[in-house]
Length: 199
Image 1 (cartoon, rainbow, N blue to C red):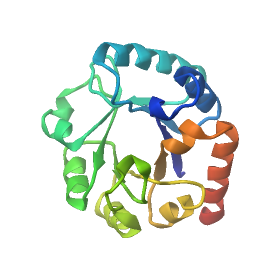
Image 2: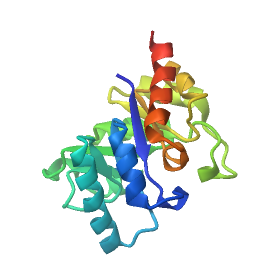
Image 3: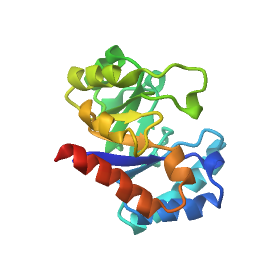
């Protein structure tokens, strides 16, 4: 089943960050990924546990974007992955990595990750001035590996169907989740667009 994943960015929120997380978790995305780069380590860990309490309350899986032995679900950059021995880190239940080429996706799969996030697919304010890699790139990544591939970058209700057609197993969305008026209605709209493509 196509997964819809929320990636966080507190700078985009127009309300208290944890209030927004609770609204999103109650809307039941397939996963929440706590990405915020602006947190210092101690504050990140504290906020991460706050988010885990919320996500556990609604039975929504949550992944952390920093590698701490306190968390069993982690997401990494490719350089981070290349500097660890993932198979020796027995406390990790789920590990993913962001990739920007087919070669990186293939390497990541060989190194034992459970999924890759490929991007950025469409133009996005998060990557101003950088050309998107596009749907052909996404399709090539999907065909190159057997593990799940999730797309990221400029994905919304208008183009999520194209991501599905390109072969992705899911979509990661940041600004839409952080800024929408009603996360529950937003997810319904995204799932409706995906369902129409799948059937």
